[in-house]
Structure formats: structure tokens, C-alpha cells
Image (cartoon, rainbow, N blue to C red; front, side, top):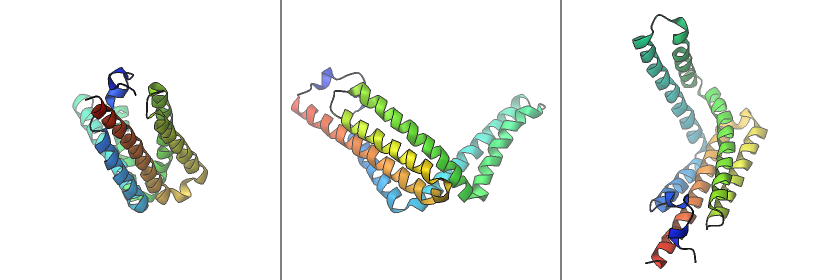
Length: 184
């Protein structure tokens, strides 16, 4: 039996809300798997809003501190332009977001492998490794299929990734809760 107080320093970051967070991620993941086009379009629009908002903030900053330098206006212009292009051409935006998603999934897999190594041999490290493998497979599948199937792949892949993130957190949270109850 592992004493919760003897766990490595990384483990305390998994607290009492880990189980609830996992359940919410499973729900969001299932929603994405069932409605992939809606999740893909929502992701692209969200990304467009982020670019547009960042462009407006940069434009305000440039206006306040250096309005006469043409090059300082280039970054806010490009951010606003890209954000608007995603709104006017959401399917092209989805393809761009798809490439970013493949990169994200690749980074997520490496992050999961790193966390699994950090908490090894504590309980839950195997689940974290499994999560990394799933994210890596999803990234490779997306890169192989290309932008043609971006609309449904984005929604499904985000949904699957969120689902497995949730499963991992539920597993870790459940084990921590059981160990905490046994130590009382």
C-alpha cells in the first residue's frame, strides 16, 4: 500500500477535484465524438476570436505607444486579418486548426509520457502512458489523412483526447480517494 504522504512531489497536484475534472472531460469528449462537426466549427471560431482579440489588443497598444511606425502595425493587422479570414472561411480555418491540432496532440503525448515517467512507479503512471500513446496515434492519423477530412477528424480527435484525459484523471482521482480513505 502506498502512503499518500510518501508520493513524489508531482502527485500532490492531483487533488480532490481530479475526479470531478475527469468526469467533466469524459462528458465533453463524448459530446465531441457524437457531434464532431459542431466541435470542429466551434474550435475554429474560438481560434478566430482569439486571433481577432489579440489583434485588437496589439492595435490598441501600438496606437498608444508607437502609432507612427508602420512595422509596429504589421502584427495587429495580420492577427485581425487571420481572425476575420477564419470567420469568413471557416472550413479553411478548420484545416489550419487541424494542423495545429496534430501538433497539439503530439505535444500532449510527450507531456503525458513525461508525467508518466515523473510519477513512475506510483499508481496511475500506466494510465498516463496509455494516454500518451493514444494522443500520439491520433496525431499520426491526422497527419496521414491530411486536411481533406479535417471537419470530422478535429471533432472526433479532440473528443477522443478529452475522453481519455478524463479517463486518466478519473482513474488517478479514484485511486487517490481510495488511498486517502484507507489512511484515515
